[in-house]
Image (cartoon, rainbow, N blue to C red; front, side, top):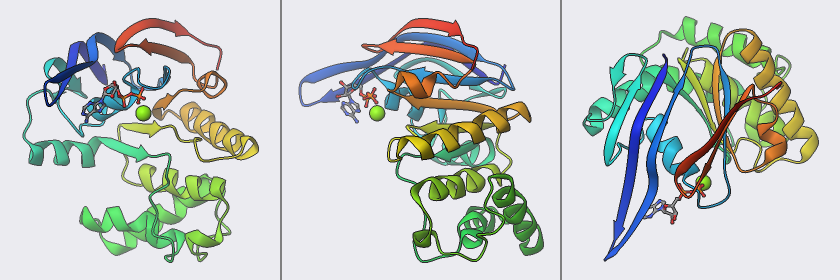
Length: 227
Ligand SMILES: Nc1ncnc2c1ncn2[C@@H]1O[C@H](COP(=O)(O)OP(=O)(O)O)[C@@H](O)[C@H]1O
Ligand SMILES: [Mg+2]
């Protein structure tokens, strides 16, 4: 299993108010799946995304990511596994606006110490894969929202992650551009990429091959979908 989540709890304490954001959540994701995690606002989606993305650790329970136990890691160890295993795609694309698409995709690879020639080759390859082969020199503020999100996807893929983890990836997009992004996710999944996508929109979740629904921090449904 690529993702093994078992009896996961996350409690937040603010002053004297305790919130149980995740309560006894268990599921597995195999390599090659395309899973949507769906639920209304406040249901615990972002909290679960932070756990899966090794941005935070659970209060109790177990999380094994690609054979490594993430539940009890230090901050430095979390950062390391995050860089090796997870390609993030966020609602707000998190790009550098005045830099080229190539630069944006190459930057995380530079921090990871990947040699320049290899960085350029991979950036070109993944930008072309998401349909931006003719936008290599454009700065990201010269692109549409959908194109910007495609740059973010190329940036995530270029690090060769085990999982592409997307948090409301179409939240800032008009529906035609949202559909473009979903088509890219479906293509990537066909090519073998594992995708976990967080969304509150049933229409967007419907693109995945499996839909996990959470409500009030609990997993209430886990079903196959035609995608
Ligand atoms: N850092 C935090 N500190 C305290 N409470 C939090 C924090 N993050 C989320 N919560 C609470 O946990 C619950 C789940 O939030 P969240 O995971 O953001 O849900 P969603 O992403 O589905 O809207 C909410 O009640 C929220 O108020
Ligand atoms: Mg959220």
